[in-house]
Every structure is written in structure tokens, then in C-alpha cells.
Image 1 (cartoon, rainbow, N blue to C red):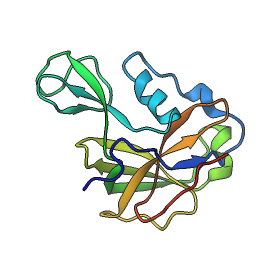
Image 2 (image 1 turned 90 degrees about the horizontal axis):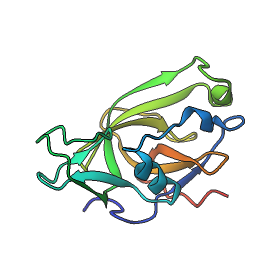
Image 3 (image 1 turned 120 degrees about the vertical axis):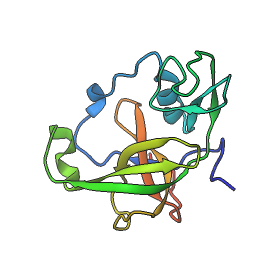
Image 4 (image 1 turned 60 degrees about the vertical axis):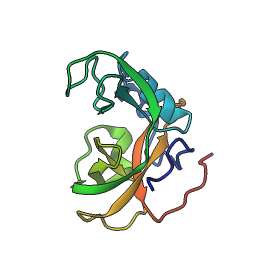
Length: 157
């Protein structure tokens, strides 16, 4: 059974410096996705014609071309397809996190999501089971981050 369909997401506290919120500018197509994360929920836009999920967010379904959609809770589990370790500071807020790991994950919901692996998690590997969590940034924003599938997390302050 897929993990946590419609349940509360584990939450990871921001371990970087300052508030990187200026980097996140949700579009009208992604606002509800990020609002869901901030509320501790993983929701995806599903096509009302073919029932497939859309991610990244788009105004029309990439599979059938229709524009009807509904937002629904989605399972939070996935499998690592690939990963990279970042050693370069692209923005100063991420400097304390160096080096950090970025994962390419195939979600059981049928979409691929690219996001960081939470600090302190096991060394990544292709095939590793992970779960989506919400990383809380200062200012109230939340972004996707992954934790190992066996890891139970507490709500961040």
C-alpha cells in the first residue's frame, strides 16, 4: 500500500542560513501544490479526463491535452532513480548545507520529483526507497525534501 495517502507529511526544519524564500515564486499552476506542502499535505493535480497526475504543474494535461483537473492527495513514497552531490554554493543561504544531495525520485503516484535529501539521511543509492517530506523555510514557505522510507520524523518547530 502506498505511504501516507492524504496523511500529514513529515516535516524537516530548514538547516541553511537566512530565508531563501525569494527563490520560490509559485505560479498560478503550482500555488496549491506549495500551499499543500505548507499545510503538511502532498497534493497533485490530476486530469479529470484521463486521471493521470501532472507534475511539473501545467495548465493542460501532457498526456491527453485536456485542461480539466482536480487537486487530490497523493502517496508520498518513491524510489531514487539518480542523485548528485552539490559542492558549489549557488546562493548564500545554502552554504551551511554543503555538500548536499539532490535526488531524482520516481514517486508511486506516477510523477518524478527532484528535491534535496534531508541532512543526516543515509548515503543515497539508486533504488533506495524514500518518502516525501516538507522542509519548512523561515517565513512560512515549505518545499519538497526527501527522507529515507524507514525514517520517522517529528514536526519541526
